[in-house]
Length: 123
Image (cartoon, rainbow, N blue to C red; front, side, top):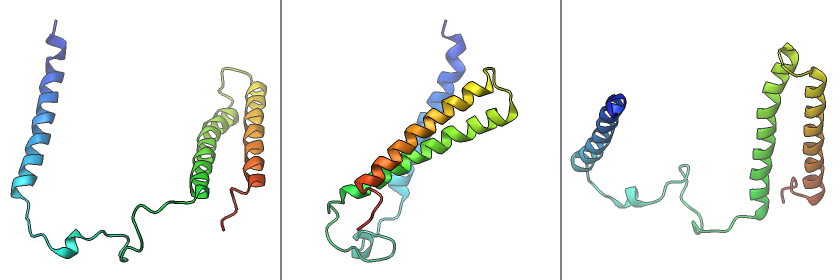
């Protein structure tokens, strides 16, 4: 009963043993010369300013969420355009067009909403 899984179990055991061996080898064979410069935080080559736990503006998160939403829109539009252009869809192209128009109208309404709320203005 376990015969079909034998090769997988051997491969899994090899991967786990390899990972453990690399972690132990890097822990024991790695150089250890701690200095104060190595212990300081590194932020793009500039010395850190202020506290690391400083609060961000909510608008930063709004911009990040908007980027994700419009990135997902692009991910949905590209395959749809390829199917619609090629005409290889199993459903009618009129249905695909109507479906995508509804999708774009909902996204446009969301864009207008965040524009009116001022989420796109950076102060």
